[in-house]
Length: 78
Image (tube, rainbow, N blue to C red):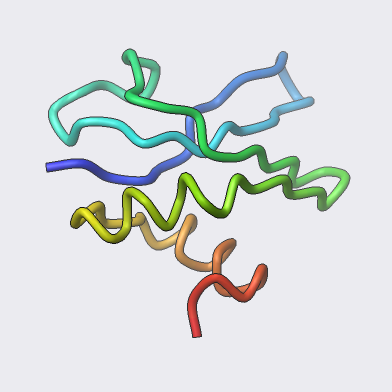
């Protein structure tokens, strides 16, 4: 099963996250299937690849709670 979840990157105290499509059994820092977005909680910036996100959602990918909240703010979800 595939999930859309956050992958941590950046340095200490300046964390940014990539939103990735990844297999459920992989670790947080494991190899992803595809990068589908970027989230910076400090600057409150979000960049999303909407077609790629919709592609994975149509094929049964489940977003985590945090990613679901980010997608709702971007109006991908209702």
